[in-house]
Structure formats: structure tokens, C-alpha cells
Length: 124
Figure (spheres, rainbow, N blue to C red):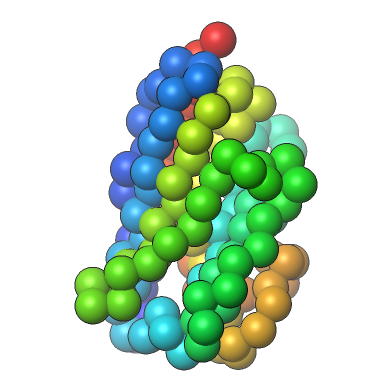
């Protein structure tokens, strides 16, 4: 059974930083793509970025490029989302997701497994 558990969310002032974690069980992060998405109140779930399992290649949405970084600890089977220079518009529930295939995954429909999400609130 695949489980993804996010942690690290919280309240931060604009310009601050947070690091989210996505701990995976039942699936090895080095053989599948892990994505990060976010959903603000009243909005659709939005792609943030992904890391390809086989080689660690990352890809980001334009809205977070240069501010957010995805990394991983294979030994701990955990993927991280480092968020810097946070803005109030980054406020959302952030979720990690895993897909059965190892490849690009920009759409929520590319992913089969989801975590429960963690709230990130950025105050102005």
C-alpha cells in the first residue's frame, strides 16, 4: 500500500521560507516521479513541480521557478519542497503525489497516489 505523508507546513511572513517533506512508503521515490501541487481556496489544484525518480531531474511551474526547489533523500525515501521568498499568493494546501510511471508529470491526472496535504499560509 502506497502512502505519502506531507509535513512542514505552517504560517510564515512574506519573504520567508519553509521546507515541506513528503515521506513515502510502499513505493520507492527513485523509480517513480514525485510531484508537488497546491490548491488555494476556491481555486483548482495547481501544478508546482516534479522530480523524476530515475535521475532526479526537476521541473517547475513558472510561478515558482527560481524560488522553489525540489530535492530528495533516497535513503529516507523522502522528497522535499524548499520554498523561499514566499508571497501571500503562495498560500494554499500543498500536496505531494506519486505516479506509477517515471516521466514528466505536469497534470494532476498523471498521478495515482496522493498525500493528505499540508497548509501553507503566507502573511503580508
